[in-house]
Image 1 (cartoon, rainbow, N blue to C red):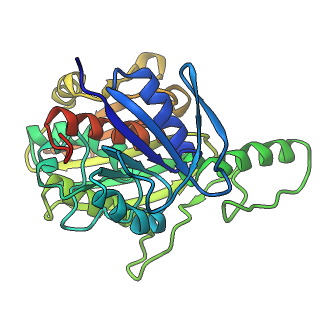
Image 2: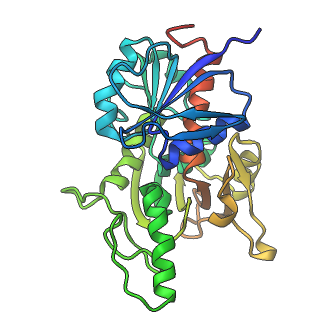
Image 3: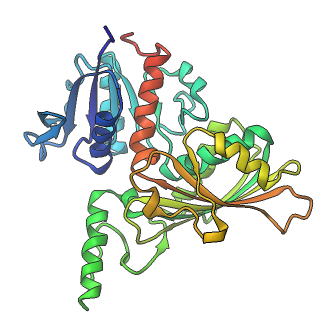
Length: 343
């Protein structure tokens, strides 16, 4: 008989928590009890899962008894407060916030990239930033073929990255603008309908926002390559739930677009959408709801006549591979590798 594992979702009523439940329902995950944890405001709410209705419990320090795996997506401050209690209760936490990503004692993992880092976990594993995941799932198989010297990336990020209420705000503002009404931004700092703006995270002393620095630092950590040169510009756009990114890569030696296509065609978690005759390339509307990251516009960078540059365009579902799916895949890898405390 296949062993079952008890899983708790912290932040179960949020956008990522809801997609985690969808993914559990879709995959043959050996799920025993599913414990849904959220704020006191949501406690008592009934959520349908398969053919059962699960009552949401208030997140408390003693919420983790009997739990094997915690998927934490309730915000960094709550992760800092409650994750140690989960570990003390014997659970392994896969944390989807920024609270632990750059902690040198905490593995930062994308299973298609660095599953071996899970071996060193001490009870907590960090899920990378969504934009980092969507970029690196595509860049990593190319990096393995030939070391990347420099990455220049510009992102076009969906409002799902700011949460379910930001998604509702985009829908509401779109209706308001079309009706000739004024908008009043609440979840986002500016009107998002029919607009775009620099990512709404704090600007640091070097002039980069937090989101941009996350992409740089997290890639260095997962690739185990602090010499990789990177620069990023992150932009919020009026798209509901899939991020897109324009990526320019400089390699240490010549690398053809044809070779890149062959490698990416076999890469896990990647689907090529590259049809120049039809001018059909990755679009967020097509990436939404998919597990794979879509990649296209695979072409030689003509500014590098020595053939060391490539340009790519990618789209990936921010709520799935950018968050919930990656967390579930980490949980699966922990089980397969017998890396749970309770195993």
